[in-house]
Image (cartoon, rainbow, N blue to C red):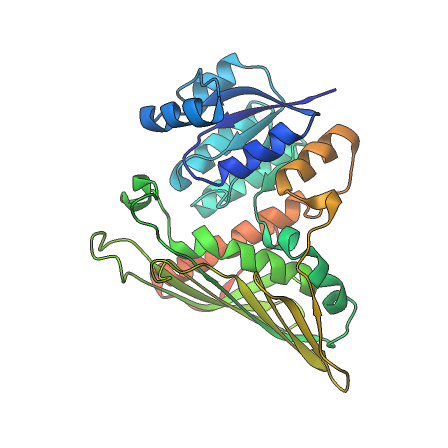
Length: 333
């Protein structure tokens, strides 16, 4: 039995990771693809050999036979596509962010539960840093007191899709990027974010797009009382690499994990040691996790509820940044 997928949108480079994972998996079949932008269509037909027969997710849902809808539209258009897919009885895998409005998120939660459908989101840090989690989850640095994560990015203005800069299409940098760090922290701590204590954003460093939000910060309270702080940006100097980091302060030690160096673990009274941030063969990509869960019930590294909870945490932090509000509760989905 194959998992037949249809792809709604090729508007962000993250779709290439899904395409690679799907093509390497003999149990996955790409049944249909939709893309509205003619230049993007031509590029993916030429460079990836895709047969793109549809202009929109609406056409695709009306005409194609498949099990899972993969969504990679412009950020502000994703919620509509995901909701339409759920109404049509399709499981969903979406690039992050899942949507840009809290009302869309709650409608996605409602439809997925009413129709017994799965919703996966492409948060990747817990996959990339899988081997770093066990020592922290097993208490080697004690109870977590606080976590600080940063995700600096290069804007790569000349190659980034131009819809990023159109009013209303991006939806804010916290909702765009911080989900990776929030998801990783909630996983290693075994606690969800329960409140946004404060958040802020800034429009700087991109003079050709003065309305583009290039910097964001959010400060969270977690359900066990710990705090978490995240900073994301598109301000990496040209020619330099991005590098996700997370510092974890425990009651009896600390740890630092980053893309380049793996995990530096420093338990109190013990020698420091290093671990590679390796993946696990079972959980190489969030898309294949969901596909094999649906096909044979294989365990997923992230549940649908965890992905939805993380999406809500970044949406509420984005609202806090946009409005200047503090102390916003994050309900449990």
